[in-house]
Image (cartoon, rainbow, N blue to C red):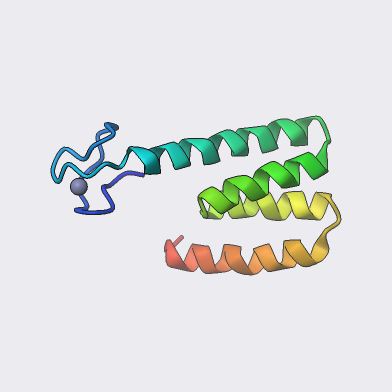
Length: 102
Ligand SMILES: [Zn+2]
């Protein structure tokens, strides 16, 4: 999160927005949890535990849907031979790239 979702002020890392004083700490906690699951997915990949990778990647993606987390989940689905899920995630990946103008 780079900006306050309420007033669009630049986020300085504090739990409350410096401009509108909104409590955005819980949103930051969700992003941190997503990042933790993402890192766990990488660790599972490195140990060739693809079902665990898919579990962590799916959790990361459910908490924070970005092209990065969707791509990780799609790769985990492919490695776990869940091709329908991988194809579904591919569609979400393309949509998210268009939403984020990537
Ligand atoms: Zn704000």
